Every structure is written in structure tokens, then in C-alpha cells.
Amino acid sequence: MHITAELPPATPSARTVSTPRAPLLRCLARFNAWQDAVHDPALSVLLGVQALFIFVVGPLVSTGALPKGMLEFCQLLMQLVAFFVLPRHSRVRKLVLLTALPIVGLEMMKTGVLAGLVLRMLATLAITVLVAQAVFRARTVTQHQLLGAVVVYLNLALLFMGIFAALRHAVPGAFLTLNHQPLQPGELLYFSLTTLTSTGYGDLLPVHALARSMANLEAVTGQLFLGTFLARVVTLHGKTLRSTAVDDNQKR
Image (cartoon, rainbow, N blue to C red):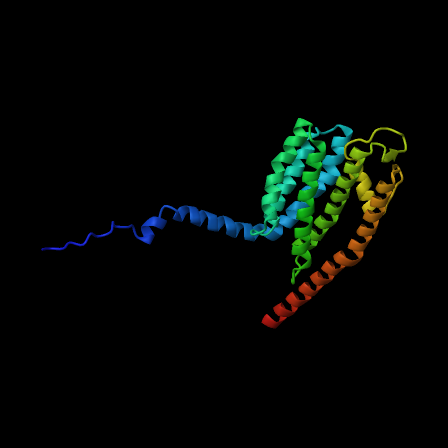
């Protein structure tokens, strides 16, 4: 009697199995390497887009020189740039992408103003916290980290602007203009910036008790940021430059 053992079906080698996925894995590896390379420069790009939104697009939209859709475009662009600023393994990156399209959709449909405002504030808060961590925890501070600290500072104005907008949505008479005209788009951002920098021109006044309290909190926060956090980053940047100069002299 001959006993024949049934052989298991032949399985392709590991090399054969992984071959179809190899180009995808290589592309993914290159994309991840590119993200790591643009992580710090993206801080500078984010500051540029942020400055364009705050100091150019916002005022021009308020005067009617630009369509309001430019605000949504700049906000979406800021979130896309912030996606590359955040660490690759950060969960907040998914939050940035998931909230980007709903924010723009709610703004364009003119519905869910408060919901869009809340989503925008959550995304801005998450970006602010993580950029602050990337800047203030860095052992060596480059020029990009310095610009990242400015991003955090300007984001504070955007966050408080969101608080003021939500308060105005709940209490329409929370703010008063000298000419008693309705607030235009962008005026609360102007008020937030002048409060953060303790300029206070007085042409836009908080009359509600909570609005005054938030304005005081923003003014204190702005001064503390400049006097402590930003000063620390500048000091670390100076130490980085000195250590780099010492290393170059030793190599020579």
C-alpha cells in the first residue's frame, strides 16, 4: 500500500505578495519624508496665510472690496497648512481635516452659524495648543519656531474673536459702536486685535458684563504672552545661535 501525503497548496512567497504594494509603500514613505521636511517651514507659511487673512482679506471683505467667500477660502487654506505643521502621528490632524469642509459648507449655506463657529474655534484651539507645544518644547529654536510663536499669538486673537462672535450671537447688544451702526464682518476681529495688544481705540465698546470680562481676560493674556512665552522663545533662539557659532568655530 502506498501512502501519499497531500501537500498543502503552494503559497506565494512574501516577496511575491508584497510586490504589488511596494509602489504604494514607497510613495507613502516619500510622502511621510516630505511631511517631515516641510514641518518647520510650514510654520512660516502658516504665518503668511494668517497675516493675509487678518490684515488684508478681513478688512477688504468688511468694506465690500472682496466677496465674503474669500474669508472661507483663507480659513480653509489655514487649516490645510496647519495639517502639515502638526506632527504626523497627532490625532488633531484628523480633526483639522474633518472640520474643514463642514465649516465651509455651513458658511456657504448661511445656516448653522453657531455650529460653524464652534467647529472653527475647536480647530483653531487644537492648532494653537499643538503649535505652542512644538515651539515651546523645542530644545533648539530656529527662525521657523520664532514665527510659530507669532502664529500662536495671532491665534489668540482669532480665538477671542470667536468668543465675542458667540456672545454677540447670544446677546445682539453685547457690543456698541460709536456711530450706533450694526457691526460689519471683521469688526470683531479688529476689536480682538486691539484688545490683545492693549491698544483700545474706543470706537467699539463691550457693554455686556461678560463681554467686558472676556476683553479684560484677552488683554491680560496678550501681555503675559509677550512678557513670558515669547521672551523665552527669543532667549532660546539666541542660545541656539551662540551654540551654533561655537560649533562652527571649533570645526574650523
